[in-house]
Every structure is written in structure tokens, then in C-alpha cells.
Length: 260
Image (cartoon, rainbow, N blue to C red; front, side):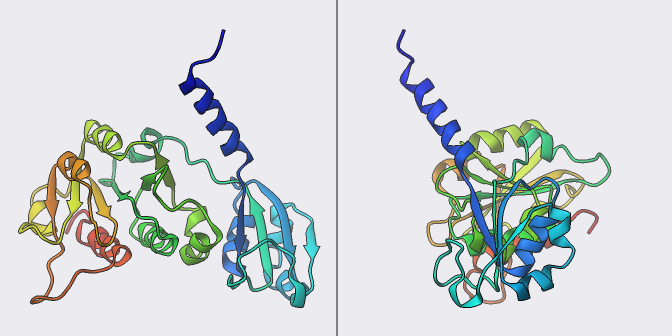
């Protein structure tokens, strides 16, 4: 009996995902990945100088390094990558499900960030750093039309990629509804609305809060906007223009923190 098309596509997608690998580069990104026991490491290419700088992280990662000449670095990286003599091939991290990561500990009201078609790896990397600093439980992006794990993202995240859950979901609106069912207040960031984030959270800072950020330019899609509990803005002085999405995420996380 011939398999249905959707079954074939699902199996193909699963097979492709299992074969996917990522090349991380740069001393900080490689060191943090080597020290992460959850990260599956496949191949480490380093110059002797980089090997000295990585120190015990190589032993911790339990991987035999391949020594490369600094003048002919052999890792398959983009020519513009600032690799600092270190590159590590890894499998993408599996952070589990939204339910696994976003329930919280029952003590501190949880915060999560959702990204609606934010595709720039540098922006996502910076958002992961901010999410780690402000204690967000997860950053949630789309499986398609979003920045995947890449060396550039990891380098910008400066190690946060190894510690800050970055979940990829098939349908953002469905995930927002799932978070609502878990008790989250879902706020979409929109610079054109009147209500600022502080006003929207008056008397509600003990709630779990999900902050939804749109791509620079187009912002939130209509379906995403309609699924939010409310749309809010970051108050700005005078007629100053909008922040870029990574800066907006940092400010929104700070503004939404519990107990303020």
C-alpha cells in the first residue's frame, strides 16, 4: 500500500533533520559547546594557538582535535567567518517541547520570547544573550522562515546558544494558544499602538508573560497579531524611531520583569 504524501514528507523531513550538522566557530562559541554535555560533537578543527586557548575544554568535550595550519584553515566555513582558529562540527541541540520548557518552577513568574519570522542570525543570537541575562525560559522561533542554529548565530550569542533554550515550532499561532492554555499573557510588540508595556502589565506582573517580536520592517503578521492577548509598545522619547528587534527584545524583557 502506497504511503500518503504527508507521511512521506514527514519521514523525509525527519531523515534530513537527523543528518543535519552545524559548524560553530570562534573561541567562545567552540569552548561553550565543548563544555556542554548535551551537545553532540562530531569534529574539532583547531590551530595550535587556538588549542592552547581552549585549554581543558577540549578534554571536557572528549573529542580528538585535528590540528590545522592558520594559513590554510581547512574547516568548511564561509570565507568571511572570524573563526579565531577554532571550528567545531556539532548536531543541533534538542531542547524538547514548549510544555517541557515553559511551565516554570512555580516560584518566579516565567517569561518567554516568541519570534515571528525573525531571520537574521545576528539578531537571534543577540536575543538569546538577552533572554539568558533576564532569565527567560525560552526563545521560540518558527521551524521555517526563522534563523536556524548557525555558526554566525552562535558567535553572536557568545555562548548563550548552549544554555538558553531555543525552540523551533511549526506554527507560531498554535504555540501562542498553547502558552495561553498554560496561563501565559501573550503580548505582541507593535510601535504603532497606544498602550505601553508597563501599563499593560499593571497588576499582572505575577502572570506568566510571553513577548512576541516581529521582523524588522513587516512586524507581526496579521494572524500573530490577532492571536495576542494585547498589543503593546515600548515608550520612546519624543518622535524617536523604533528599536531593532534584538534591542527591543532586551528592553521588553527588562520592562516585563516580575516584581517591579
